[in-house]
Length: 68
Image (cartoon, rainbow, N blue to C red; front, top):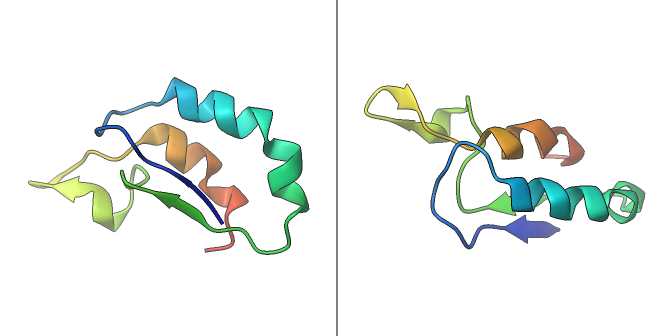
């Protein structure tokens, strides 16, 4: 399980992308992976507010690393 989410919503998160890139080898070796974030990934049902997508595109980019 790995989590990230101490910031407010924004469309991209460069710090998250740097952190995930730094630890990508470790993360990929874990059998079951769960990514927990405060902000939802972009283009998902939870990121719709007042009819528009407001989620984080960086989280969407790396969500396939997760098993959920």
